[in-house]
Image 1 (spheres, one colour):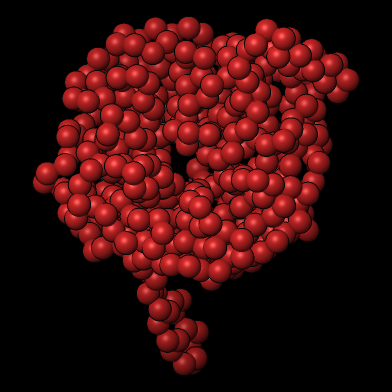
Image 2 (cartoon, rainbow, N blue to C red; image 1 turned 120 degrees about the vertical axis):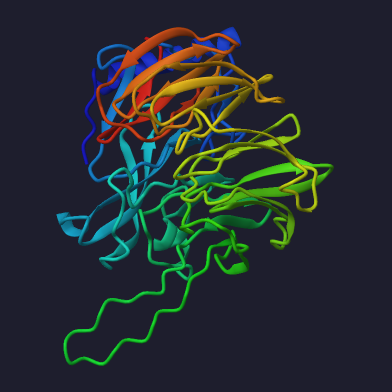
Length: 449
């Protein structure tokens, strides 16, 4: 692995330390911990101040760390390190034939690789099939109290310590994928919980001529799974209810909320969103949304409502009151939207407004309580990354590395635009008072210089 920098390691490190020292003296808030996908709130909000609003390959880049392989997991940050997953070819070969699934730690000050641990190898051709916009390492890792949990979807799940040592693995919950990996885990008390939305595919390849017919593979149903975060053992697994969805696979990351003193695990799947009791997986409420499948955006929660997208083929935005019991499809849907709803980018709530960046790069602002549209306007090109809110600004990035910084409000006000000119599907993260951007080839630390 190599790290290429816009200036020498010494100069970048020195500038960074001076910047952080000044921030501390000035009392500027920083974000030293970004423990999971979409940050400490799990909803794309940061408390950091003084973040840059403009950058380019030769502007406000503190370092650029180039990495091999293909992975679209977003960075997380803890204790001066940046943690990401990666997928490379086994022994330098083609990753479509054999993939080495890895977890890496980068030094947050220099971008240098501190350690690089292989967690799994995968050589099954069916398991390695994926969509051209996906990777074998798309879910982000999650950090808590010196440990990291890496979930590679159908490939398996693992726990590592901060030195990169693998503490346990679990490969019990495998299935034949449709488009590769997706969906990050969440931690609730002593449980690590993830969506396991398989496509219920029990088909097997046709036998060779003259060979006995193979027995059908067991049907793997869409489910939600909880592991003991300390041992990796399965604690509970709950199958999804039957739905109208024409396909059963999805890639959503759950969200943990609290309503009337009770924790709810909000877990969208194909055709249905459920609120489960995270202790045992028992259902609190559900809402059906027809034929929607391949659900990707992580839900958000504000004003007593859960906001989500129903997925492909035609996404519908839902605002659901979260205080129901049982099937609340007809009673607790506050409003729906059928325009400018994302297939992939997660939504964002700032104050009374809900923001959605659709996959074509159009940004919309709606009244979160009523769904009334304030604006729907072109912001960027085709987009997959989720929105970020920090220091009074909304940050967005498209698939070609173009970014826009927007002021929240009922009219579109673009503060700045930037270009990195590198493909990116990963969402931005925050490290201290800087931004982390992962592109197809590298990780960037963007900070004021």
